[in-house]
Length: 177
Image (cartoon, rainbow, N blue to C red):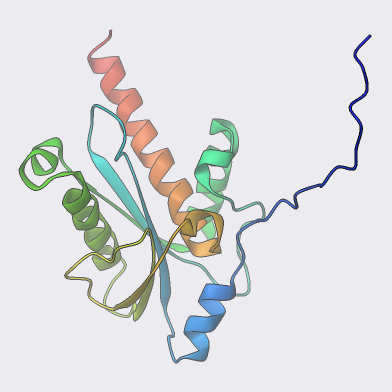
């Protein structure tokens, strides 16, 4: 029998992303706000993917969170819900671009491509990270740990992760082992 550990215990609240950054951008005049995130900076193989997502401020999928905190099955479900309820663009930077530019610049290139893929009416982007990509077609704000703090960045995190995982699974089928 294990001995009881004396308390008191502090229970840390579980914080989920919310729409405070999106609301703040709207209060400063932004109309079409895209959350942007990338995936694939750490792995040893494959391209880096980015997604840009414009959520409807009135209707968005329940359960949005940082993709790393969700199971693969839940990410896949949420990605389908996001595609159905939001404007979404996915882009990537190739392995050759990563080698030529470096991983940070290639990640930023994929992010810019994703934002541009949404069209010309996006006037503000919330970018996960501590640096803004150059050449964004709109004003932007970087948010450290944005995928854990902003609903639209969390949505982008999920879409980008599912897209890259799907691509890498396809490559694994083509090149077993």
